[in-house]
Image (cartoon, rainbow, N blue to C red):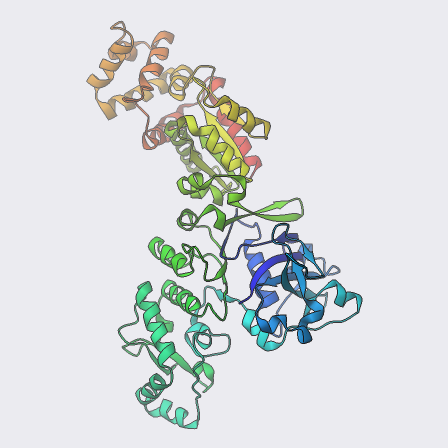
Length: 568
C-alpha cells in the first residue's frame, strides 16, 4: 500500500516552509519544545485523512497572515493498482527520484511513479483537496482522489483518545482488520434493551476473525482483556449506529474503560494487524500514558525493530526511553533556520548511534553542555540546584542538557552532537587537552569551550580559587566522606610527609592549596570524582561560599551560564 515519499508544507502555523522526504519505516521527530513537530503530524493528517471538512482558524496561518494560503502537499509512492489507474489518475502521475528527493512531472525510467495530494486553505478557512501535477495545472484541470482511494491512504492517528477505535464506527481500525460486517437492526435494538448477552453471542458468531485478532494482539502486548474479548452493545450508546457495537472483555466490561496507555498499546497492535490496508500511522508523544517498559512494547508493535518495516510511522517524543530504543536512521531532527524548517536524519552525519544511546536526553534539548567528566557534570548540576533554590531559572527551563564527555572522548562526543545540529559547548579541565585536532575542529565550527586556569583540573581550581572558609568546608566534606586517616594519609603521601591534615586545617597556605588540589584529583581515590559527590559540594558549599573566589573559577562558570541563557 501507499507510503509518504515527500512532504511539502507552506505557511502552516509555525512553519513558513518545509520540504522533507521521510523514511519508509519509523520516522521519530525529535527536537526542543515548540519546534513544530506536532504541526508536521497535523499536516499529514489534514492532507491525507478521509474527511470532507476541517475546523481551521486564523491561528493555522503562519504569522496569522491569512492573505497567503496554507498549502500542504503529500507525495505518495508505492502505489497500488487503483492509484496507478491511467483513466482516473493518468494526468496526475509523476516521477520521484529517491536519491535527490526531486519530483518530475514525467514518469521516467529510474523514477518511482507517484501521486501528489494537495490541501489548500484560503482566508475563508475552507479546505480544498486535489491532486496536483504541473501538467494538470497548465491545463486548468483539477480532481481529487476517489473516496475509496482516499480511505485507503488515510493514516491512523494514535492520539490521547483511542476510544473510537474500540467500536465498529466510521474510521475505526476495527473496520480494517477484517472484511466482516454486522448491522444493528431493529432486532438488535430490542436485544440491546433486553439482553446484551444474547446479542453478544450473535456478534461473536458474526465477527470471529476480528475478535480473534484483537484477543491475540492484546495477549502479545500484555493488555488486560481477559480470556475472551466480546463484541457487545455499548452501554453508553444512545443510538443504534455503527458505534453501538464495541469491544468488551471477558467480564463484559467495555475495553474503552481500559487505561489510556493500554488503549493506545492495543490500538497500535491492531494497526499492525491492519497494515496491509492502512500502513501510515501518526503518534504524537508516544510516551503519553505509558510506563517505560510499555513504551518499548509500543515501539515493537509499530515495527521499530524489524528489518522490513510493516508500517510507515510518524511519531514525536520527549522521552529519552523512546530515543534510546531507536536507531539513528529512525530519528529525524527538526530544526528551524530563520523562517525555513528542515528535518534531517540523525544517521546522515555519521556514526552517532553510541552518543544517542548514552545520552538520549541531549537530543531533546536546545543547548547541550558536554562536560569532560563526572566532576564537571556534578558541578553544573549542583550549581543549578543552588541557583534554582535562590529563585534563578533552571537549566532545564532554559532547554539545556548536560552530557558526560567521558574524559578523553569529550570533544569526540561534543563534535558528534554538534554535527546533529545542536548548540553545543564543552566544559573541560586544562591539565591536559584530549584530541586537540577534534577540539580545533569543534571550535572552528562555532563550538565554545570553557576551562580553568592553565594546567588545572577542576579540583585544583577549587582549592586555589575559593575563599579560605569555603576551601576548608571542601576539605571537611572529604574527611566526612572518607575519614580523617584516609585523607591525612593522602596529604602526607602527596607532600612526602611535609604537610598533614591538621596543618591544613590550622593555616591553609598557597602551598597547601596546591597540594590539596593534586591530592583530591587522584583517579583511584579522588575525593569528589562521582557526580553525586560534586553535586552536593557545588550545591551546599561552592554555591553559597563562592563570593570572593578568583576570576579563574567564576569567569568560566559565568560565561557558560550566559551562553546557556542566550540559547534559551
